[in-house]
Amino acid sequence: MQVAAVEALTAVVESQLVAGSDVVELLLPSVLANINVVGSPDEVCMQVHLDTRSHTLQSKRLRALYHTSCLMTVACLVQVVNAWLKCFHAIVPLLDKTLIKAKILPVALAKGANDETSVQSRVICCAMLGSMAACLTKVS
Image 1 (cartoon, rainbow, N blue to C red):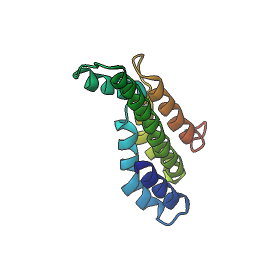
Image 2: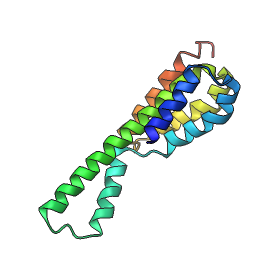
Image 3: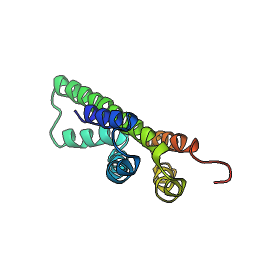
Image 4: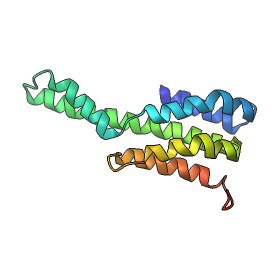
């Protein structure tokens, strides 16, 4: 359901039904917040593991259910992240270069900043930087 909602927001941005300044003011904070809230698939899988571990996994059926729910959670997570990144990609051309450098670039760099960052966070960082690269010149 979240994916469908984000795809609808992306369509509104791409079709320019809303002024660029309104998109930046109203939608960009939500996009950035949702990109940052989402953990990596490993973190989500670990959370599922921790939740199920508190209950004894007594049978093969429960173990199979745990594995399936973990995989489904990861698959859903990837879809949600990709939807938010697509929306972000649609918004970036509407942004002023100074806003990109001051507010967006630090968020992207923080996603992939240290050695303990998950692969998924680094992929998100790269996707965000790739979206911004076309808007910045060498002089910027």
